[in-house]
Image 1 (tube, rainbow, N blue to C red):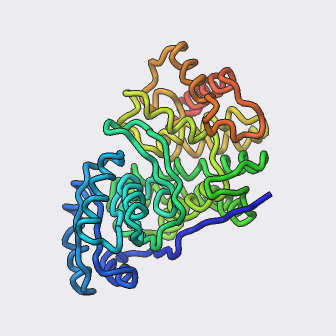
Image 2 (tube, rainbow, N blue to C red):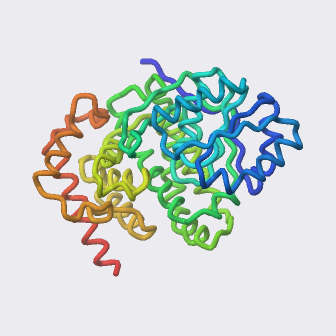
Length: 368
């Protein structure tokens, strides 16, 4: 049994660190392509430009569409080659970061990720999740190395709408339950081996941090302030979740979250929000989950505002036939649903989604 653990070379988190991005990037190279979407480029162009000039770096801006599809990645590769970029920076959300990873590996450049929201665990990983031009999940690639630098500015994170921190909590909650499920069957994680004790411990720390500090962090982030709770949750969403999912394993929660991208009704919802309903489903799928823990997690999700019902992700009117068809797709041979130690059938998946929806509706009604 081979165990593998992978991680970025350097992780920097703190208030105002984006103002010093040039200082952190300079040791990696001088010609720097920055991949960012239309909104982020407008928000942070001056900050990045100033810091690059102070550190004698050449800024090569690449404004992509906002979708991490293969066409946009190809344009980024062309730009990086034409400009002889030595470093690729992904500045923005998960799609900007995943696009930057693909470009960097294609042109053999150093890689920097600088998230502006803490909505997912993409910044630390060596994986790119592909989407189609209209936002449907289109598979993923595992690259041979992780980012050279991850730069997380907590002031930037709390300036964004609190919804994105909540979304990251949804993505992060999946980490421990999926890691534990995959390890029981000694499944090979994305890192290329079975989980180490380090990966499992970090996955559990992610879960414990979110459960202990998540409610306070959401409240404080809504006021756009960086408190110890916010700082801990940002680290959990970004670093702990990233290390945990990649080196320990994924399972049904992400299968559900990724699969929901195929529904037009789910397009307004983020990756973490869709994965959150996947967490609810997995908690109702795995018979080894302690009933009290299941209720505690559902209560927590309701309190912080994560989806726990089909209606919460736009599928309140889905038919029984459509939900059964979705459950069948989630059990296709290539699905990560099969990382569980037990056999997962379409009936199991359908029943778990219905049970999660029912429990979620009951707890939400009680909370009102």
